[in-house]
Length: 439
Image (cartoon, rainbow, N blue to C red; front, side, top):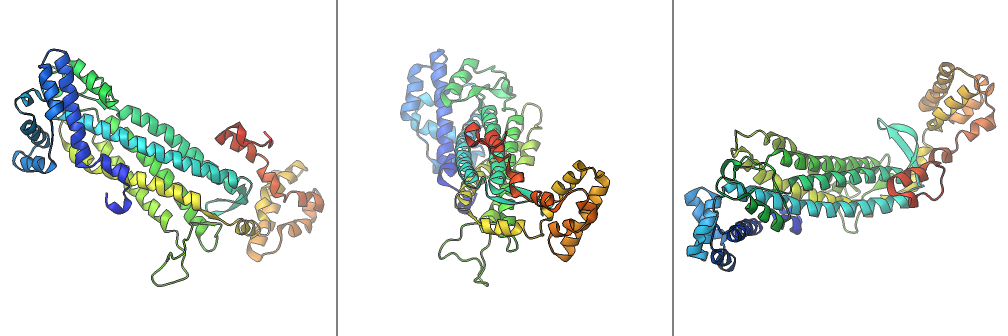
């Protein structure tokens, strides 16, 4: 991932230094277990920990000759350890190192992403509670529907990211597996107890059955969850982008002093951060299909998955880490315009209350078909010609034969639409979020 969309903690997980350090720990822990089992001398295991060193430039130089990264690494280790290095990698195969290392890296990446989600959830909760009662228009198909609150909008996104956090925890648990089972996964040349030891030392669990590789359905599930999180990011980003449109302007990204929106038009205030998040979401989702295709490997293993994972694992986790942090900042600093929300509520002369009028007419004795026809007729007239929906209804004898003007006026009360907000907030944030609103 390019530095523009990278944060240091996540990037460090995928640096060669971190990767080779994990490789070394896998090999050294395996030697400890073999020494305890009497397979190799304890002095050899001690020497590996004491003298084992690696040099990235030297590994790269050896790999240019061997065309095998694990062999290059082991060769370089042997140069620093001495004669005891012959006990390295006893009965192991390259995938034992590569797959176990990837499991460590993905669990560490998941931990950072979980922390990112916690930050975003905190921001969403704070802003949702702040705007719990900030009434705005709800839209379906992009068209005015009925009133809601801006807090409810944010609460919905909070709930989505809370679900995502649960999914990521499960994906982390599923990916945190260790394989030290040797060629084709039979443990023929390495004791299964070695695998349990290495797994415990690295915070993993032993893979129940590996075929020289850890089954790739685990990885597919992990990256699928990242894709869902990315889509949730885009969902909120698109909402903000629409609300920032000049014709709407109900909310907008914070625009800092000295910030420039356009090289040509000095007046521009563009939703560049949320547009960027939409693009990053596409990038993360691009990892999902290749991860699914990696599940089908030839027999006990091939390496068609390897090149894919070397790119998508760092890129997807780094991009998602950056996107979650950026979205949290956008939410924290989001500028909300309640006056514009109220103006938009009133933009269409009250026709947003059409359902209440329809229901009241049916309850007053009019058939649903007749009620729908009369309410729609007046709503369309206001839509096309302007004016006030209430005035048109009150001037229609067919309507006033069932409902008087005062009765009609009460149907235009915005509070009717927000009476259960407290109940919904209690469902999302817990009972403390309900200040006594109707259940």
